Length: 550
Image 1 (tube, helix red, strand yellow):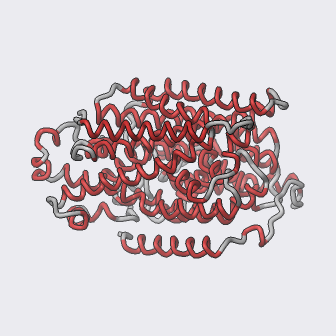
Image 2 (cartoon, helix red, strand yellow):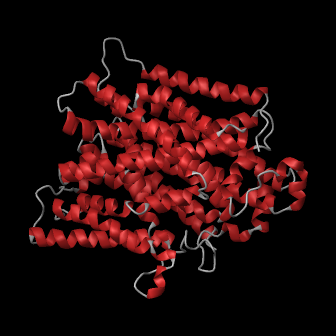
Image 3 (cartoon, rainbow, N blue to C red):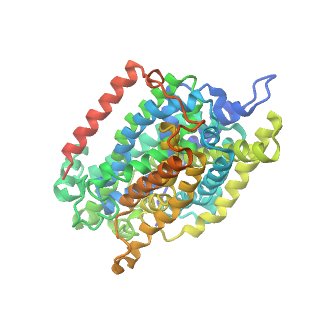
């Protein structure tokens, strides 16, 4: 299936491309008489305002894995997958109040740098190498794969050309300009992302209701498949293993979200580039508010597509085009690209620009963060401690280019993954619990030691694998247990924390570690604006879960 684009579709998409490249290169230019230094390149000169931080956080987060993968999960699972977004809103509030003050006070460039200040250089290096591998082989490769899959499905562009094209577009401005180019273009990307997403949502709901509008469409979809609107799944639901009922609210989803929003370099890097802590916290609050509406543009279209596919009258109204590459429960990730073909001329271009914006902004963010970690935590630590600003920036650009080339080679090898969003979450969840345990205890427990943290990091993988291999049918012998992967993440985190606590107490005999962080009440004071906004977000979340509980 390829979608027929007409002049205005190509014009809108081309205008989007020119605008992003133009703005990216313009903000990347060196000011007269000023050589770009490490702070300029990696932290945007610490000059980002709150609205740019909030927009950039969402642009970096929302990618093909949300538009394609989460819409696919909406098709297969329903609104329950929106917990990843809505719980993220609450997580952002926690990160803004309790994590950011410590990170900004310590003047960090990278998250591994915190590990060095709190634990040791050895542990920092272990985690830095891990993150670089994760970004290149999982994050960058999966975004390139899902993005090129969308191009192939919608426009008939062969996957290899899609991979190369997306990579070159992201590289064109991000490699040269660094975080400043990425963050400022993200503000534009978010406008396209939200506008295009809302257009697709409107089209799907309007089609379901027989051109009666979005409210009628929502009513029709809810009445047709009320089970798809249950936020808390029971054990009889075939998707319970992915979203295990109340475990979503009190279990492993907290591990996924706290790890992602609190200790993920390509996310937290924006907040470290703020003008001030207060500015950074306001940006976090804006991102939390935007998170509340993301399910409307990425999950609801998937549910609407499910109703359309299973309604013969609606399918018949689309003619032969509607029958091509139909999404199914087994091929749910086709849902969003399938919907795009029915958009009218002009709006196809807007929606496609939104999808491209999601992909390009995430690629650019991951590239910048990969190069930041390599340059600041590997190159300057072990290869050239006295590198000049010019040399440091050039190494950042070169390492980003190499990472992109490797990801381009890996991307086509990911073919055949369905519900890619769930796949990425599940396999990242093997390593994220151990990292989260190390960071939480490092931040808030002064007795945590370096040796215990290293032991915790090493033992977290076998603990995670103990839970992971059970679903393959090995639980019948009574030794292994078979639990949903989010529960696995929760148990792994708690057990890893226990390991670190026990070994820390043995090593220091209950005394505080010399590198323990001194915390004070004043450190966590937040502005009235942040407090009021955070309270409003929490009220909305309670209302949403109360409305869609079952």
